[in-house]
Length: 233
Image (cartoon, rainbow, N blue to C red; front, side, top):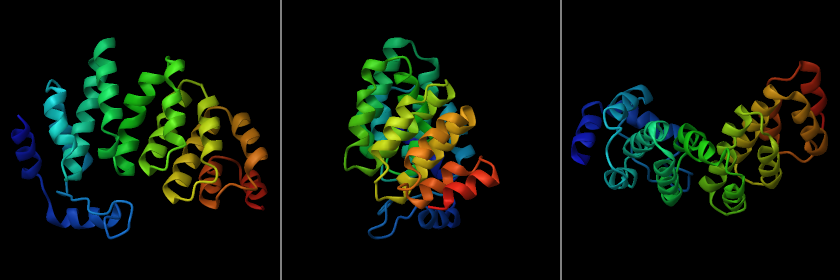
């Protein structure tokens, strides 16, 4: 089965796109995606293939998710999101545990963004006692753990639950990485679309110390007057 999936992905490989993706996802020395390899597939192409294999086991996905090829890992993660939607409660826990166990393979921003809300966020939404793992991830030194922590709260935001987004954003305020600045700013912006007062309260408290990118992202849906006010540090 694993070879069948890899062969299908290989059939859609595109060398020129792969070269573009390698630059776009920063795979050079000392960049955040250093050493990642690409086949050059688009997301729609991967989703078509993933839908054919919703019923494969986690044991098979384990080999795919640890591949050196980005599209192998992405396809495995997409399959996980599809499996999660159809799963009973016991299987959802297995999928969630599998995802958390394999965090080292979820090692680029697209891998996190496409899947963390749909697995981690969904699983933790009504399980408040287990949300502490997001805080453990947010306070780690691991870039992708931190991104998983904040992006998973997108699911909470969609359900008008903002406190974890606020708390984790505060934890990450002084983070040095641009990808965390963008992720936090994005989640704050989404929170503001649901409840502008919550965003304004956060900004009033923190805007003077927020990294510029984080601040700019968070302001995108506010009025021009509001944006000008907060950009004047």
